Length: 423
Image 1: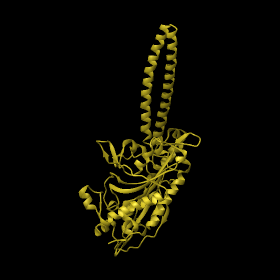
Image 2: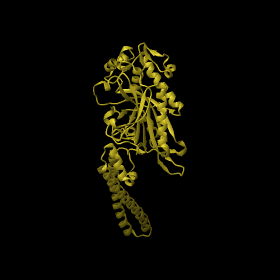
Image 3: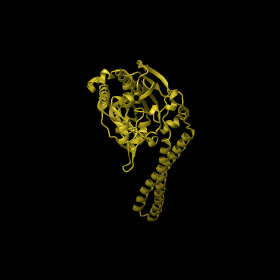
Image 4: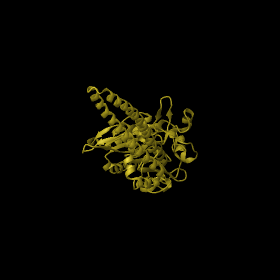
């Protein structure tokens, strides 16, 4: 969430930048600043009341020693009232702080100055494109038909076992899935990311820490008996490793990678754009995450983008990179780059990765700080990205590499799969 001093010192900028999201922040910002003023006044009154009570307590001791019992009892009565006043002020302060937090939770992150204006994904800005789109002719099959033809992914069986959006990978399909996970993790660790294996369930505090709660509560699977959530991405447990941590200057940067299944309760819709692997309730993803000094977080973002580009280049998939416009930007992000692979058989672009800088937005919720060289603590910047999400990578590989003799496996994956063609 945004820091109150930042809002107070940059009120006009916050309101203006949030308009890029089509978010009218005036009333919320005014409410936050009013609650903060009330909070500060209550804190000052409480501090003064406690100080007065402590002062009188010392005087009472002296009066009793001096035999001035009546005066001491008069002051005792006054301190009793001060204690009652302190209790009431503390309760009011806690209530005001809670109201302030609840209002701050409703305000999204301020977009970076480079975020383009726009309302929908149609307004996103293409900043890079690489790879040749293959000419497969009119007989090219979409991945869901290829999956059935070669018996490598069974959507109907997944529907029988669980429901729509829970596919079963079989034979060479399962091996290709496992190969992609291992390949992504190896490429990430070779680039300096430290591998972690993470829980697939998180508590409420973790959901609030990274901003999934309360913004995306309806998209998460909730286990009511234990008040736990199935993770929508490895970003949530990985970032929460550093919740309530004070890092040292030399600890930065922190760079992690991890594989997890991901679970999302997305609203149902129909059509080819959500068919097959295009949109799932359970899918596999390898994530990269960084905790950075604020002075170099955008340099780190560029490094993460370059890293994902290298992987897609090795897979020889045609892709493009988009800088998301304000209207398409995630709630917690200051700047996001989306990677999309071209699906030749579907004749459209499929999102396969988002790489984002959250600046201090998550760190403020997480209370993630580091001690600077001058000994003062400040909030770190957090970043994360998909490296990569498997379903649409798989869809692109199957569709773009199909031939009359089967589906060709990219050379870089053959050591992991143990085969070079699916037929």
